[in-house]
Image 1 (cartoon, rainbow, N blue to C red):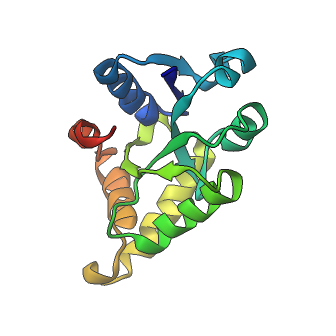
Image 2: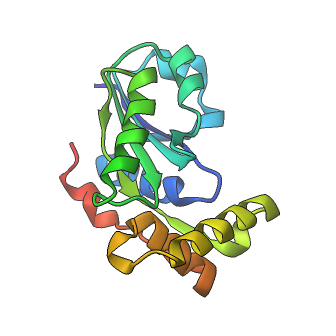
Length: 167
């Protein structure tokens, strides 16, 4: 089987997961921008690790234009946890609108405040401020993570051990 791993990232979380997964499975690894149409078209299976921004997986629409095959597993990497069902459903719906047959495995990433642009810093500060007004039990895990990043400069939810059970 001609399988390989693609990733699209802005801050590095998806890259960390993709590199480890490719290493463990001995699959070819390509950054999304480096993959040619021939690479993608000639594959039997693609494992796509993409950072989540505003509920959408980075680069997924472009991948669809170049890889119409549906043998795809998408790994959205963001700060939402399995407890954030509404957020995960939004991400899943966005993926399914592009790749209806894709298998989806959510992964948690990291957020390092110093890597963010000024507009991104302002957005997370606004989210954190609104979140702090909520009772702890009413907060989503993504809100708790953003608060931690604002207060401490970073939050790291990467767990490479979750890759062990993925085939």
